[in-house]
Image (cartoon, rainbow, N blue to C red):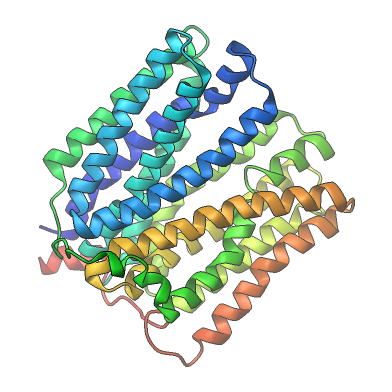
Length: 405
């Protein structure tokens, strides 16, 4: 089967699961505060717990992908997620105990993390020579879903109770499960049957750990998107929440429109150049927020940040897959996703601290963006004259693979 044909079902799964989750997610905090009278401090604690729940899911998904198989692990994650969404909707409709509602929400986050490693591993299994392009295609589906979900959820919430949104999320996830069972083939390699002693093999791989260490500063900077940037632009610069939403909308639209052609173009580059340029654009985009004040210029800054994201995200996933032994690919990609999740969470924490103690916008964004500039330099220095995945250039595009097939 041509490679792109194998990826279309995954793109559709990413689209409907992202749309279903983002349709309901923005309204969970509102439900707790407005309907159940929960203080914001408790909501913040729940969201912190959700980050750890997603990390646990990454570990489970990586192990499951290698031990049970890619498709069975993905199907199991989606099945449990459907049950969790149904339970959430039912408890919210019946005003069930808050602790039970929170536990089911955390289960949703566990299953979300659990689904990511098998999907990433399937793309890696199907795209030996063009992984950047494959991961770029996958990101299009996810961002289309993330763009459509909140808009639809916001409209439906005007005349439906919050509980119904989570029931709709269960319906969308059911469609994703059906697609998984009917349209996603199980790729080679087969489950490894690895022993428990190999559980942390990825963390003993020095090359892989070195790569994660290089990526971590970029993830710290990327984590400013929905935390530091929102408070800075609304509280300090006086933007409306609608204007900040416009920045996020631009981010999603650009990824949906430009990610795949940009991934096709950058797939022919040396890995260090794609990673370094992505980190550089991340840094330049966030740094510019220290100076720009006019809203059109802020949109330009967000466009630069998004270009960095579109270059760095698929290239880093491709290198992680290149570094992974085929029988442990799920585990390695789970460790990569775990590092990314912790980077985003730690970035939000670090950005929040700087926002409290650094009054100068230039100092704030200079301190944050310097991490991306550091990573850019390290990618170039360590990639220069080296060998292995950081230097690897895929030989063919998906179109060329299809012609060969």
